[in-house]
Length: 171
Image (cartoon, rainbow, N blue to C red; front, side, top):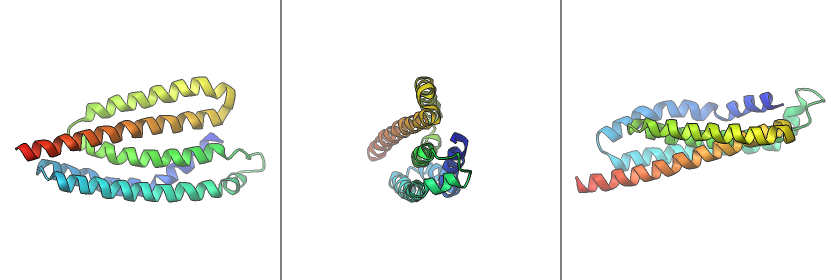
């Protein structure tokens, strides 16, 4: 069940992944030229676009999740992992936009640190929940890890943009 749900999470990320490939060079260019307003604009547009697309797809998947799972056979009745991982895909798409900014602004170590925290949340959550809730516990742990990563990446992006804006005004 979890593997099926994870494949659908990947489908949630299909279009945002294509859009995100354009973002990194755009951000690198605006940052190099110290065009903070254009950087902010590019990030906002991508957050709205990626977030909007993935939320719509996640809601659709959630609404038809019983049907999706029934396509795999009568024994696949647990659709909760599908719903949780569809919304984890929303979190992933948002953190991918922030990650592109953080990488392009030469702060890759922050991404490594936040991904390590993602892993800690996923592993500890799985360790606690999988024995009690099986695939639901694993999916919930993944959703919590993705939400943690997204929160950290959004906060870092906001702080860096604020600092960049201030430095550009002073310089």
